[in-house]
Image (cartoon, rainbow, N blue to C red):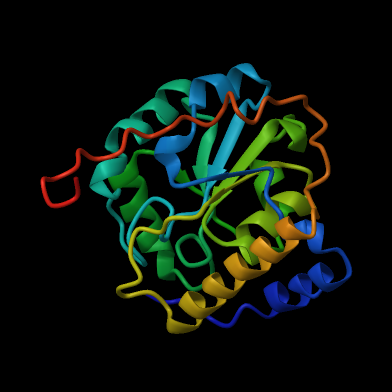
Length: 222
């Protein structure tokens, strides 16, 4: 199952031209293994939402990317029932009878949000799910600046961008091109010292990011 045209997403993204800070995340990590979920929770972020494709799974896949197994377990152990997946395919009107959402829930053991409006629009639907939780205490994790990061920033969430994707194979070709463009723009904004506004909760960004252990070097690499 693919994604239908995201008209509302295009309209919302034009806001970035006026306020480019909207696409700047609070934190950039390589992938979810860099996130210290325990420290993030201790800092005051009590609920967390994830994009799915190329953040947790391969594009349009149901199963967790195997290297993320321990990190995903850590997230679920810390956040328990306050973790959810927000996809622009599964759980939307493109997902007939929510069959893909149900398959993902079985594979990843967390809920998939049923929602009508696609990211970066539709934050009200996520906030309704996390009823009673202030948006500033919700983290949103994803691989796309113009959808996931703008979505979270629009509603005052703590945004985390995963810069290393699972795979380009099987991904929407346009999404691949746009993601590369996003990274170039983020690099430009960084050089221009355009930063995300300070989050309302004083979160130590260095404390919530763990350094992954690099793979051992082979003789050829030494």
